[in-house]
Image (cartoon, rainbow, N blue to C red):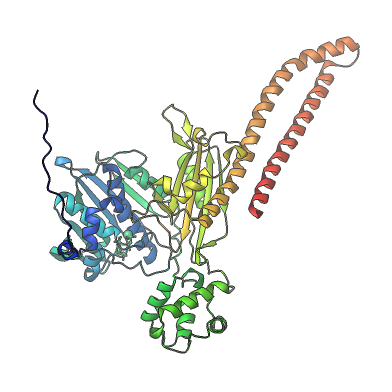
Length: 551
Ligand SMILES: Nc1ncnc2c1ncn2[C@@H]1O[C@H](COP(=O)(O)OP(=O)(O)OP(=O)(O)O)[C@@H](O)[C@H]1O
Ligand SMILES: [Mg+2]
């Protein structure tokens, strides 16, 4: 016997009072929070972590070059070091970051030029760059080397770490020298990351980035030394995205109070007209009538919460012109068509062009969708065949992870694919492409990999995809028809010659060649009739969709 565990006898637990518990009460910084919850920044899993690093630096480079109106040239180099460490070097030809701001930009969280803007950009949180500095530091203990040049002949370099407790940059080894470098170059070492060529890896990420940014020249140097250049296919720099004012229907009471307390305007009325789009003096007057208890002549600083609440509630009862949508910068159907043909070499492609819409009452957005069939479309399945694939983008940034909780995936799932002659989406060589464009992308988390499933968003994405699915259906029907026709025709034609000779023989008159010609004519006419019927069937599907929309 023996080996039996004895239960330790425990004293009954005593009640603990609040002041005892609150001796443990502590404050901590946002960096400490993300250090503990790094998965929220996308640092989970070795392959995903490396893709996240490249993604953060690349989106920054594309944003910066776009804002500075420069044709982007981005170089990404991944090297494998001893001890399973990986070195990542990324260089862009953008405007650079002034030395005075470099520390806060890359060594402090919740700091940047984008958060307070209402503008279509890839970054929006002010976390990405510093997140990478932190991840390098917590996996290797090393600082990140930065080089920045503004193109004025001076180049600045430094090492950077983050003071985790205080969310402050720690800069060492600064040097400044003369040189022609313009842009930002970041060199950082990481552990717990891995380079591979899977569909979630850096190679695929950059390939997809190139597809949605045909104006960018992206070079990747792999750990093997192999160099891939994703050539720029267009010299047209996308127009600089415009900053717009928020729409009254998109604001909450809290927003209104905060903005009112921060404004330079002296009156509530002028604050409203200066801050929001579509807010004319006439509209303010209408509002004033609806909430007579609020004095619109007073200083915005004196706006109280209940008053702001009354204003926001009344805003919802008024009719508004939709927000301006000219700030949205889609990729464009020509470019998408070119990119998909270039990369997937499909049999068929269709791209939809839809008008901008609004979500949450006041945030403009737009969906670009495309479908590709055949060739290298779809994803390789384990059984050698190809199955349906979805490539998701938000403001031209490929979304590679968390597909299951994304509005784009949901929209694809909500489509009755049989209606479009796709029996099983997972078993057809189809690629669905969707780019969600907005001044504010409602991501589900700080990792920015999935778009929230709000009804108006999922609905619009679904319609955009249905539009191109319909084109594909026409193509597929045509193909099936063509095949049917060819085989049947072949079989019949095989007998036409013999039959003509026999007929001529039987009748005793007419040349076999003439009879043959007539028979061939009859067969051709019959197949044209079948073709007409198929087109009618496609029209029927269209009608079903229209009815659904009206509901
Ligand atoms: N390559 C770059 N060239 C010029 N400026 C840059 C570059 N990278 C970053 N910046 C500046 O540093 C700021 C911080 O970058 P960071 O990636 O941390 O945040 P963000 O891009 O604003 O938002 P997000 O967290 O969503 O990425 C940016 O807002 C931008 O002003
Ligand atoms: Mg960023």
